[in-house]
Length: 358
Ligand code: COA
View: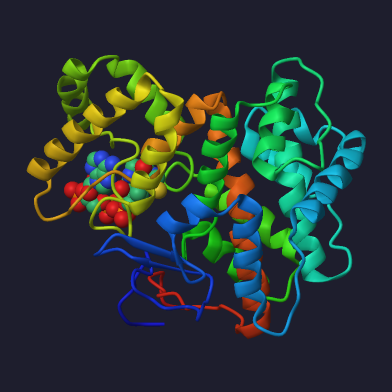
């Protein structure tokens, strides 16, 4: 075909959705009718899951995402662990999650598959993390909340109330974000009427990339390398001089600070992380330098900046940051798969041929 290509598909509207909306100019994120700030302050992850799945399923369908239902899904995934073979042997947690999710059976319909996948993700990620450290997996406790149980399965003991609350706020905050690359991937797969598990596995692959969900680990590496606020400017200038990007800064859609950065900065405060002050100083230095370098392209902190500080403060190792993002976003992907199957059309764009003429 001929015409002008738009390789990043910026501004192309590919779906009508009730699940979430991003206003990149004003820095506003609405999740199924609620501001992200309000949702993170007032709802547990289970409440947010119910909200996005209901939005995806539409008014007529009934989906049960109650805490007990998700607890039972975690318990079912635990039963599956002995049958995962070498799926969790991967060095990378996203590879392990992808391989382990492949063992789930779709079951009775998309809603059941969604609940199975959302329940399984924390069980698989926690088991992978402990295995890497040579530790036995810890069985889920279905009566606990999703965030508290994830932390417990990972640490081998209950998290403090403050860390469970912070992790819960994190899981709510990142549950959905309009047509992100991984969500688009999930919707493309769903649009062919493939199954929900295949769609979320594809989305894990998209989220793994450092331009999308792979940034919070590098943010922590950056904070470690800088060490003290006084060293921030020189370090950042060195990175830019070497042609590298500053992790946790910039976004495809936001032209102001990502609203999720403020929510997470607030959520991490009760944990008294020694890294919080440093992170604030590095963010300010990076924003100033990038403003001078790229006056025409606003580049502010994105969600990954304070994700790194928060997940570190609740006790997660940095290799687990991207898989933990997936533990939350798998709910958003599932909602989009359900919505796409219900309302969408097969997504099949076109390409501009620049090869030799026949
Ligand atoms: N550090 C330094 N420069 C950056 C930058 C960053 N973090 N993010 C963007 N830029 C620069 C680019 O080099 C580019 O400059 P150029 O026009 O001179 O080449 C310009 O800003 C526009 O970048 P572009 O690649 O068009 O933006 P995008 O919309 O494709 O990128 C991101 C969005 C998120 C991929 C990008 O900002 C980035 O790589 N950030 C770091 C990784 C990250 O935090 N990812 C998590 C996202 S939630």
